Image 1 (cartoon, one colour):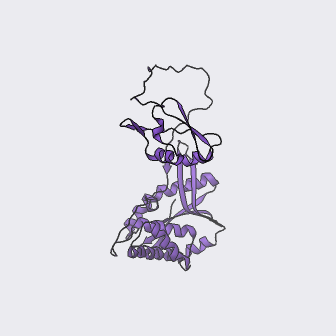
Image 2: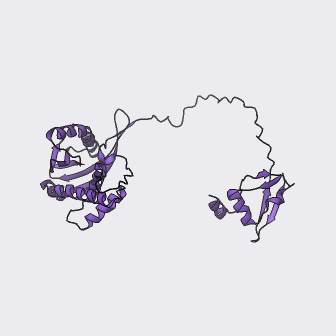
Length: 289
């Protein structure tokens, strides 16, 4: 800030600093000491010259003026008087804002706070949340598992997740590749590829009738001959039907918010699907009505 002040001023710069007194000698410290030394100003020249301007000529031809005030403890405080704000019958220019609560639609592993895992040891599993974010980012970019660029992308994403251990990072990359290949081999992926319109990681903000905002990000929204379809990708490991049904019920409110948002913002009816990428080692599609 001092550098900017000194290099941007057109006419003058006013600098306020603090001098300390030790054994009746005035001294400066920190940035003020460095500045005075650069200007060639000795604090000894201030002795006996308090409460007056001290003019100093710089080698560059410019001049500075220094005013040294007295210390002497706490400054005197004026008596505090109660201030009464005058009443007015005028109407306010703007009505006061009413604070409303927002509803965050995006729940799940992709919104878990990023953590500095920094785990070491080859026997440490990669965090599921990190794998989920890696897969979501690869799907956002729509990178095919056959694309040679995928491995470099996944390694970069793994580093961003804090996976510094080589073995752990490699496990995260392999798990992400497995889920991506599974999705890429699914017949519905080909249909999405042929869609007339496709939008990834589509953020929205929608005012709610009861007040507040609905804020969310849709993983994938595409349009084909059947209209608009919402897809939400989940990387939860689901080992049986019971776990699947529980996950569907947990995520149903999120998908219903997406459906309402698309309906209200686009004025179009839509379909909503949850794509579970790890249900008993297969892809499972669940329609949300």
